[in-house]
Length: 273
Length: 294
Image 1: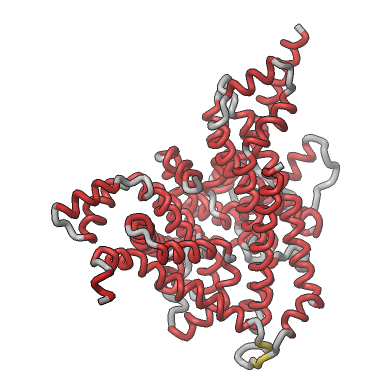
Image 2: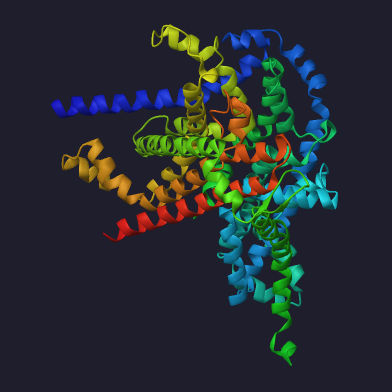
């Protein structure tokens, strides 16, 4: 009996902990949604029930934050970064595996060590370089540094290792050229890998903060995170409209997460295997 | 003759990797060299001259740099172990196949990962307002009698930052542990509990040793992430009150983009972060490698 009782308690204790941790994890989302309907004063007073200020908050955000501009900018940047980096990094990952050679391996490991380099170390020289090239405050200036990442190359290299080489050999015998093999055979067969890579890249491009903060200086170039952050840094921030902005910036990630939960999670973790 | 020995296929092979190599050389490698050269330059704005190692000497006498390093390491030493320990406990609870609502718990604990760093920082800023929801709840539970001046107090502001980072990343690390826990045969735990091993014993004798490689991986990722912490500091406290919460990355930003730019010195500070990330990663790999051999 004693054993059973202690087991019951430890089981019960586990549920208490898990419920508590889950509650703390989810509560800020409830807070975000409730607060989007409240006025700023109520938010800083900790109001936990729904209010009626949602439309007013949205209207304020459209005006003060210039929501449409920053949303458009973020979408353009994200689409370009995701498209280009997937193309470039998957080509590299493919090249390192299919055309393996000592010299290529050396390059790969050289690039891999750059995963350790903090963004903060790169921003100063990049800023000076891009100011000379006239790339500051342009979309290209944000896109270029994001298109070739060591992590994504590594990710594609790992996943290409399982790709059946015989397929490539067969295609060569059929007379397909190397670019054709890559685009017509490799790409369609690797769709799950591309899906996971899209999620990873989307998350970092959509939420990119430090470099755009430095490179984009005028309000017409501002991205969603920059807009939200600048609203939040005012002396008396209007949290009502900020919450609406936060919801809009979180929504795409939330949709992807709940629709493709398996890909989402395995994309984040599977990359390391 | 050389061309003949290299078949066309291998030329094509370079075609696949060269674009990314060019980008890497141009936008990562070249800037790293330039930052190194810059770190030997002194003077502000465009008026700079060769200063030798003077910037590096300045590091050790610069109270702001010392504060930034102290803060960053404080975040690191307190936050990373708490977060990883929590993630380990939660994941070993969730690994029990008999547990009810496993999927629900897992989703709930992972979901903070979908927020952007800016977004969750501002969420936490609003929750930790002096009259805000956290103080009200704590007072309602009679845990405190007066509201805590969270973001206005140097000590509590750091606590808020640590709590916030832990909230955002705990579930992320938990997923890593869960996926490697699946490789441990669950019958090991059943056998252990028949032999009378307590839950704590099972945790420290089975779970932790089996997960050592992935714990190392998450420790390296978290260390490198925390050393670079920037978004949260800007958006939760903006370095305040009175620069008491600044991190190294925040200080680099301040030096180069807030006032008269001091690019040379900022580059020196940025090389200091780079070295810290590299050295700490190497130490972690070495330490765990050594203990693996025993």
